[in-house]
Image 1 (spheres, helix red, strand yellow):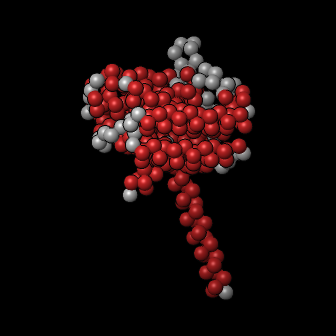
Image 2 (tube, one colour):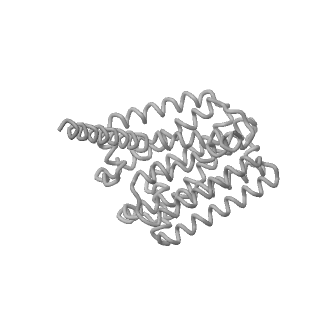
Image 3 (cartoon, rainbow, N blue to C red):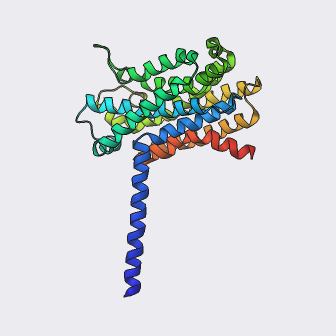
Length: 303
């Protein structure tokens, strides 16, 4: 009998641990801490790819700017659609309004703090990227938010990430605004944007039902799931080709190039898995986690 109760107790403890792990997963994903850390990781890799030294102020700014932007956009979307609580993230925010507000305000404050320590020339790029991020969900007069313009939102995501990860560090370390127009900076930014574009489309596949209800026109809604996956793969292929050109022109090292190719290959497989509906955390943890791969693979290769 004591053995039976021991098994029951062990099962209870296992369920409790699984519940804690699941709740922690919900917290880091739905609070957008995870995507902010992914941005931080990709920024560290970008600095290595550009042959720049890690800078704490720049990396902290990218982390908190990402954290604030994603939380701010989500809060605005909820304010405009007070009954829009169907998604898991919206439900989490509704249950944790105080915590979500604290994270949003704190990330905004931290963002301003680290912005103060960035070179003034950086504002020439940060300002338009920030404006695009705000207009992504904010309307001006009768003009729709950028995300509501048919087929535009995934291009905006790719453009902002490419600019923040490549062009901003280039401007930060060169102190020359025109440096962002160099062939190296533009090529790497374009290649990274293509990668982000291909990685972002599956999130539109996930949201295809909600976007249809909201009358948002997206590539998956127009082209279908299978064709969208093919577009993802084409984007990955083009990204690989541009990175190859960058490698041939000695813009990036062999380790960086290999890290990117391995990342793109794994990401292509992850995108393939989205042809069928997946658990909501698949997108938030595994698919988003592809952004962690470049730095992870890079360290594996050099060590």
